[in-house]
Length: 412
Image (cartoon, rainbow, N blue to C red; front, side, top):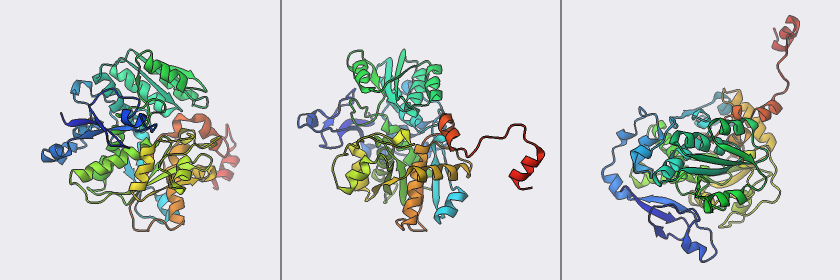
């Protein structure tokens, strides 16, 4: 067995691999929420490791199988996720003055979001553990991806509990994939019942809120592995991630750490978590040097996907450990970043653009040196949020315009 089991990110207690979805039992006894994560025999992996097995010729997350938890290859579900681009948009370089600013473009995954990495591992693990039914709570991207991978895995049932402001398009995607989509204000009450009373597998965030899976964030590690390869076996100096539950930051951070454990790098990037100013529990917690994430009352922002009122402790600890920070940006700054990316040929939802807005702010404040390498994680396509995209367009396309109107608008 390449993996040695599960380990608590708070107290370090170790457990055998298995369906542990309520967090660390030892921490529960003290009233603490301790998230579990997969741990591996890194010395054994290092002795037999061949970097050439990570060749991109295998267009699947499972080329990184040495550091993924699913043992049975028959359970390794894929829809062709991973191999996303690492690009340097000209407009962003001009805006920030950073010549080595990259975008990790996760919008090109099968359901157009980085969540596909999560569910490729999470639902493969569900299959290996013998589950036939899956559930998840979502603002949009997470649920659509869970439904797609449940379909690919041949699950008997997939129930997705959707935020009231979730995109109708994404709810339709869930149904087309064969899942059941339900719009609810209080999603956790039914999530808990489906898991505890009816034996559904929770393809949910890492830290229990109220249930969590240790397995999905293993897919996010592969973002770090790809960045390492795309930067010619180097790591960035800084990485900016939009965060809600925080898995999107902790996953890559864990991946960078495993590269170091394998002796493939001596350095680690500084991790920056970015949130909207109207919902910034990590920022408040970081400013007060809190060991846990505070609750933000009445969260408000255009960036629905990262508008959670609280988050997971592992991401906060990763920012501390990397000597990074949590920063917030206004909705206006997020919208400006959406438009800058669009003018560079990349259409993202507002939540995804928060990382870019955070990097622009950091550059303006002199927190990044001009020669440093910076990677911004953009997580989901704007095409999945047509209502939001319509609101961001200055004016709709003209219908049957006169030639004079065209000449005037184009400036001919």
